[in-house]
Image (tube, rainbow, N blue to C red):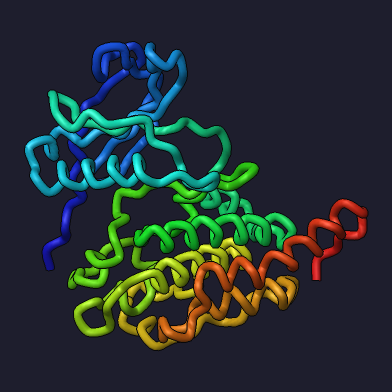
Length: 289
């Protein structure tokens, strides 16, 4: 049986001091995905560190990739929310098409989960902030479609990043192929042709799967095959996750999108939970249960 070989991603292989564009130089590489690679950069005009998100060399002449860059740039220009990453413009043409993004310090939620479950006192306010950002996005007619721990930067407030898959709701509902990260996708996003359309409830599911992963240090659905997830419900969360936090998270993971809370309903449900947990911590009376 033939084995698929993992191919190396196309890369600019830029090093410290290399020029991305006039007045914009590399500080260090930061990684990337299939379509983009990311560098920490110095921007002379802003006299500041920024993040440059470059199309990979083999994607520069790809019309679909260029459209994705342009779409993300236009969304970043239009959207403004304290929990969303800010954009500072784009260079869609030239030898290295790229976006310029806000540079933020701090770990991702994914890196925290690697150390073990995230405490309820930290997770609850994070959940409220992220639900608030989704409520704003959905009110603007936009869905993110890639909510996952790697796209949450932990800070005060936490920040939701990477709008590369985001799109207008009308376009999302017309999508007939799966887009996103399977472990955090609902049935209608995994199989839009038969279970669609995808829309704001898909983001709520993605947030629920992200919060579940953080609370339990395991993904809600562990099978590598997606078919069993389509009508499944996840195992209960650990007993030390307060019911006021666990129940809204599990509600987000209902297979039927009509049965999930909206992002606003989720934020409203979790806000008093976050306040109670915060008060216990401030008063020195926090204990896990």
